[in-house]
View 1 (cartoon, rainbow, N blue to C red):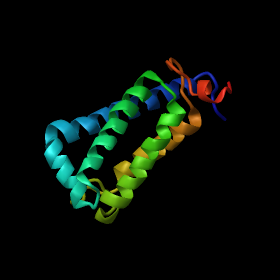
View 2: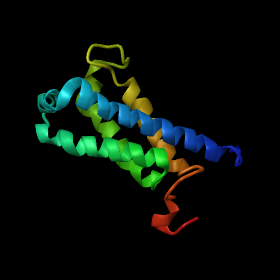
View 3: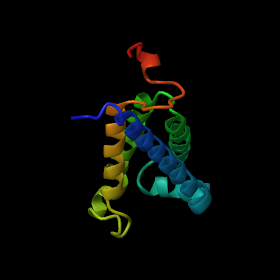
Length: 138
């Protein structure tokens, strides 16, 4: 049974946590690996180096939107797709554990599951622009 009193707060915690993690992930690309290094990594996995820019935009805009609660259900979906693509293109062949060389797929899988749960749960409390605004539902 879902506790209707606390579920919106659970969605808030999940939403903010996911958003902060995406901002940290974008920070890693920009300030730790550097734009050139991150672009080279993208090229090494078969993506064009320029693809770094839309991914960074997704992570930064998506992370901020999750934190403040802007269309959370709709933002969680492309972020979920990014995590699935990360498993397939980057971490899937490295094994399960994140401690594996090159990082395994356990963390992106957990992240994807959290995003799927968030898309199903909805915005939670204190959402700036609830997802229902887009669909007209309550």
